[in-house]
Length: 440
Image (cartoon, rainbow, N blue to C red; front, side, top):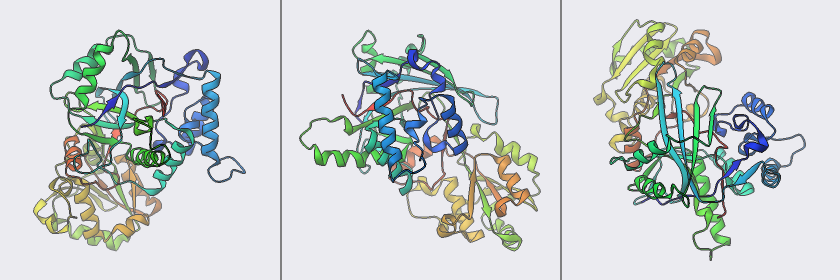
């Protein structure tokens, strides 16, 4: 079973930095160059300087990671960051509007340390996503240079009895230590709950509720694999140390039994097919799908634009070409011989069905995907517009529904991994709320 610990977080000192909203940022993997520039301009101590260090003119290899380490040391010495005096868990609440809708949701969880375990049979931590070498190496170099986790891995747990949920609800009636609204209108609130203080009686049952069975990684697979590599490296040089802090990493725990989590799909735009290949693909749709033809773009936008509320997992897709639109419902039996190896959960995913579709009907294999034959977008409207304008050679757009949370957990339990771009959990946890130093 997973082992979860409170910890002494590094946190921004509001008396020193002023408005905390100016120093927080989305996680590194959703920050592009323009957003990074805006965050840097917002405050000299914005967490992006640590979580996504940039290269300066004349830099040698890895200078940016060493510079991040020097910045961190400076912030600790000048009072920008302070270390909490007592081990704590940090209750976290996000209130947001589901993209494409007017539906408001609130999700709550808590930050703590999770003991690292290699994935595999009997592990208390279950991954579901295949990672890429480039991001793994980047996160490893940053972790090795700084010795801190600046942004969390997010995991899901199932608190069927509701013990942890009741504790979270009680804590969230108190005045938060931090309350900010980000650029997307998401409200983030944080409560520090000391494991040694007056609220200590709440900490142990909360941790127990989250550690009763294996947890599933929702977001942060690259960070998790990086932390495992770093742990193994540190063990080689400090093999006599008992229960070292580098055996743990910063984690956000979210219960899936008593609150809906929002998973957004990533739509696929097929590029460089040409009119003849598009026509050939359309001629064969009936081999794999029940096909509704002549669907206008406005209807596709309506069906797949507010997709965060859809249950997903039903094998339904939208398809848009310059010749018109379609709604497709998979004949699952027709896919049996086309699906990759794996358990029933991963073979039944909509993204797996779509991968087989693009390979079978459009001739797009793994090599073609790696070469840029498919572009990705979260917006159904953008996908349709790309095709209409033939931007970047876009010839067809497949629109998806979200992957259900239950399917994600089932794939992880089977020991399988999903195709890339299968899930996008929304909203993202902000970086800089709490920083986990690899020290006690």
